[in-house]
Image (tube, rainbow, N blue to C red; front, side):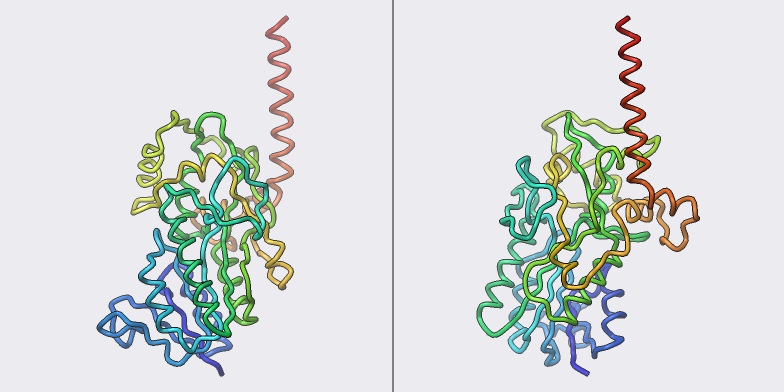
Length: 323
């Protein structure tokens, strides 16, 4: 049984990845929480990968520091394959983006979003490390990650920002369930995939579908340009340190396509609507009642009909008002 070293297993995704990989491999948790040889790092903070030839680097944190990635790579001289979790935020959120974004689009994170910039820097270091030897690297770029409990910091921030609109901006959004990201990590590691892969549900939530999910909650409109106000609002909702520089990621689309990873045999279990309902309700999918499941599953069609009815009603009201 070959050994796989997992860095960053103390994060929200770690328990799932460790459990699933342990079913087929000898897995070493090298998370440096508390530093020390038993945690995978010695007193100087240097990693010990235990001779593993495969490394999984997980970090769904507010910022991916260059120092952490550099120390992991410094210990990975004998590693032949690396699977790293990055973020779809590295594409940036720009008004001229295609919908959806494929892996061929150049990396261009918004500079005010330090978390997106740090993910892009981590990808650059990993690719440079890969070029130094006979190695393969799978870089996974997930959409905002959510779950019934604690999701990724970007996912939690985007959930909190869902009711917010600035001016006329109303982009589509995506939410990826944590289990779907974990299954992508396991697949990329088991098959030693090479390249960049978006990790996302099939499709996305249109503005009308998101409004249907939000229900009676009022939309919160913020005057432009006040990016710090948005960051403060999200930080209060999330309840702990939240990513800053969110404004462009709420104004413009950055939804991604999953075709490349699907072609490798991966398939998401949850849609964006289902992931949103699960995270918003704070409970697992299996605990949702039949009505909630049906609502999430049929949301797309229902929202389209509702939007059409609302538009027709508005047109009739305007027509009568003009008479």
